[in-house]
Length: 159
Length: 159
Image (spheres, rainbow over the protein chains, first blue to last red):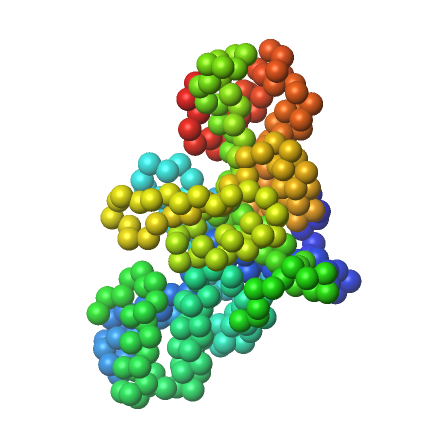
């Protein structure tokens, strides 16, 4: 198997292949979710919570570490399992609006998804762009984001 | 989104990206399984049944069709669902030993998997190479294949 060192400037070809691989892997294992969670300290008592996540079993932690290294942002968190699976899960996640806007979105604009998940990405991008322009801080923008969020694969919307 | 036409000889770059994308997508959604099924017409009363499969929901059928087109082999079958999911599943699968040997294995040798699934592929490849040499037809080869099969993520081994 080729080495893990795919980040040298002298290895453009491998970097391109790694990028396309990440696109495919995201089509399989990734998610672009927009949750709305309770937060009494915010203007509308709730908070928009966009997140890009890739989940893997512990045996493939190395792949997540390489993805994190590739993007140069995000974090990997352990999801301990207490069911009958004997392998813990790890989640690579990016939550920072600026990193989503400056790193994740341009990446998937270039290395586009090829499954139905592309639709989730388009909605996700729309929300991030609105949040960058602070539109979620006024009622009209807020309501618009809620409508978009309702169309995505949300996991933990606590309205 | 770019066009689906990624197969022209004039589009080597897009073909390379599609190939790497398929590698990533397989790391997420693919499987290399070696089943052992009953078959009273064969020498040992059972049959080795290797299969490369990628499964997707009906909404992403187009992605499977493009993968089939890319490899130029295999078939897509509908798995009707009768549980509480409202989306049928489709499976892209390659079962022919010669197509696995001549198309699928060389592809994943070049566009290698980057998760733990690479281990499954290595075992899978070992079995296909043995079957190409007809080693499964003698007792020693047969037993060796059974040992390898027991290490992979088998789905329906009916010993």
